[in-house]
Image (cartoon, rainbow over all chains, first blue to last red; front, side, top):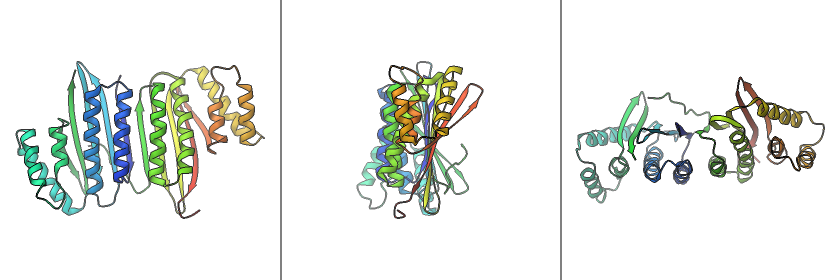
Length: 157
Length: 169
């Protein structure tokens, strides 16, 4: 198998997020990408898309999932693009700065879980979960009012 | 960072995949659900599913090597939605010729799309490849116009239609 990708542009609802997650999992399962790839891609797709739905100024989102095999494994890259509200952009930047300072994904995720139990607003768990459970590096880039979140992992077979 | 491509123009799906027949039903079902989720019209979703099934299956069967590219586009206008689905793949000269024949026949027929499709079904009995039935079904059952473009060994087949927006019917 060489490079495959799924690329969607739409105004996602939470229902569509679940539907996309299921399709992405089936898609890579049927392409025999391996159970590990399927699980990690499905989880990261769900979390990043859910964030894009929740923290969107205009409801428009693009998500792209790429997978290609490399020697002794494979490479996954997930990207989402959207335009967050200014207050959500500030929160994102704070959380990304926090994530970048953290040294251990599991400990960081545990901290987020404890904090989330006391919060009334967004839990902030999604990016931490992508890092800790999907085991993907997470970064973001800003282009004027548009944010691109990238989650990436090398799978070793 | 890749170029931003989401605008207020509408919604879209692109899939770049290996040509495996076992994946056709998953893609068909997903595109149908996607259309249903965006447009909110089960009948429109059903028509797009028929087109997706036939075009993706044809592209995978007709692919001479490498990949198949599937694109779905939904563009809202004032009271309608312009919908299209397109596949692109490398194809042999024989497959391209069969495709040209099927699309041209459906486009140029003096019969109704339904009568044309019935005639194609009768003619295809016993035929294993190149029956053109998928194209006929898209026209007759999905009520979508089909066209093709050939660029060297690459062939693109598209089916397009316009839906009324919910609330405008």
